[in-house]
Image (cartoon, rainbow, N blue to C red; front, side):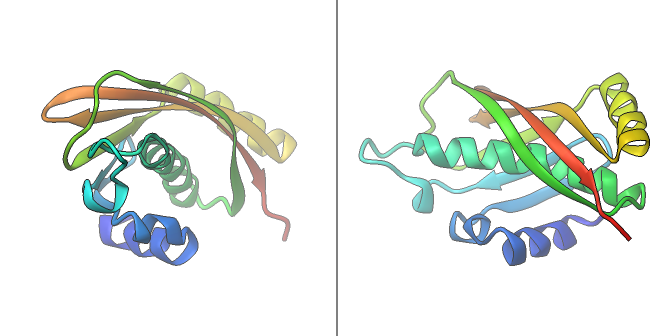
Length: 148
């Protein structure tokens, strides 16, 4: 999937992504890279609001699973079940979120999804600001194979 196609999908189906001015920098089989500016995500300390940082990290992780399922030709419903977010540095400018998934976890996820029609996977995202890790997300996502 091209980055521009994923960005359009996010804007149409997850309007918060457009309000936050999230941009898809790259969309590949192994990783999704999103970026967002400070302006629409600013808090009272003139840094990125924690909820915005978390939302971008979740979007990167969710997008990776969604893109991989689409590339595999699997229609699905994909939701986040739970996540943990660690904030390491204040973010006072534009930032990125890069997602990744362990290949062994992906293979197990796909086997379970094909066998049971639903499966769970953990995906991580790293927030970066000025070339340094600024936060880390571990998200657990559940996919339900679409009927029909």
